[in-house]
Length: 357
Ligand SMILES: *Cc1c(COP(=O)(O)O)cnc(C)c1O
Image 1: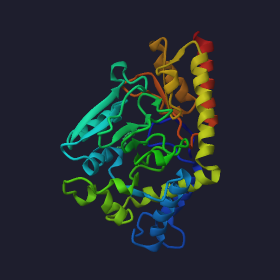
Image 2: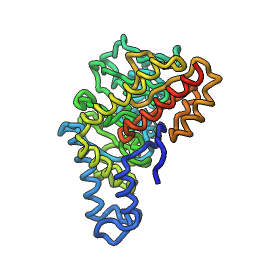
Image 3: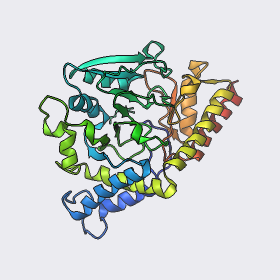
């Protein structure tokens, strides 16, 4: 039985209904007489799953016609390399916004394939804010940013008007708020935060930016091969895509991304209000850049942190320990986490203050 409030940063909580339906499909899927784990990906039944998942993403995110939606493997980390490999020639320069560890890893990979211009960085302040006054050079091949910095708890509340194609790592806030996909040329996201279980990676790409690099591309790293193959050039992560479809159905039935945004705002307000009110705690990031997905906070007296973590765990709140590069706590509040779980956490914070302040 699911008894915990899961604040883990990823893989993340999914709706209980999704867990239930997925577990049933493991035993026997629909009318196939087979488990979803053994079904051939070349069956019409599974082809329908891929098609529905892509169509749901299109509908939920309002993805324009001239964009392709594919599922690939290798996680967002594979995209760090695949993006420059497909878009950047050796003598060309790509512009990157450095807002954390993930952005940094993307930069490292891009340098293998061409030149990188870091247009701005918040590294000197341990990534506690999103740089805003920067210029994207008009001769850059593309501009890359990270919409939500999972580790540091910062989130881009607005995106720059880019003179060049904009690429975005949306791994940790895709489907959590409305974005205008048409402002971007390539969006990628590992599935395991808000989309489904780990194993699949979603890529949304404007087809016209592809096919322009000089290098020869190996098939598995070529977006066009996956587009051509309908996400089935090779065996896709069948179960991951299936559960993603269930989750996307759930999301649509709940009222879509707009409703998720409303809920996520309410959850974030509940926790940030308590962090700001409670004399024992403080937030770690610039207020205007605070993430609604991953909330980082510490205690004024770090010696109390272990005890707080224990009390939170006793109340069923798990996954709260902060990333080692920030310390303290991180509450990840993905779409499926109910407001009630956040209220359990804020109640623990209040009780802890009554005891220690
Ligand atoms: C989790 C995360 C990644 C890494 O994803 P993998 O699928 O594990 O490679 C990259 N970028 C961001 C913003 C993330 O949150």
